[in-house]
Length: 130
Image 1 (cartoon, rainbow, N blue to C red):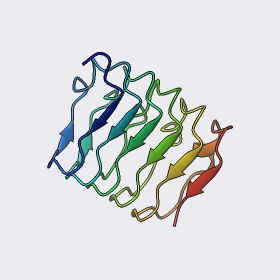
Image 2: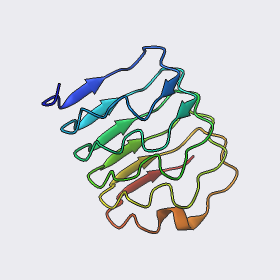
Image 3: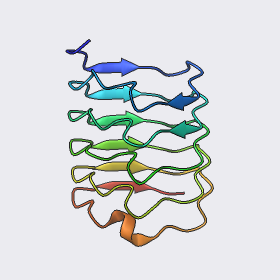
Image 4: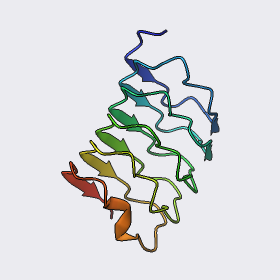
């Protein structure tokens, strides 16, 4: 599995992402986790995915993101979090996403967003908030 580049786990009834699930997939570039029932993502779950450039977590049941959820994802360019139950996003959550170009966080339960969460996103081209 070490050479795996794309992993599609859409529609698998996944409820939790443990911090050990993706440890051996350091060459993974694309990870689809959409349309599951993910409620929780343990901190640093994606930490070893240093080559990940696309992460899709849409259509889940995520209520919160730890500030370390996306830690060390320096290569990530596309992050999709739409259609979850996010109520707030910590201002440090996207800190390591220095190459992020496309962020989708629409259709959540966000009342407000601290503009500091976008501070380090110097490559950003599109943010979908609605």
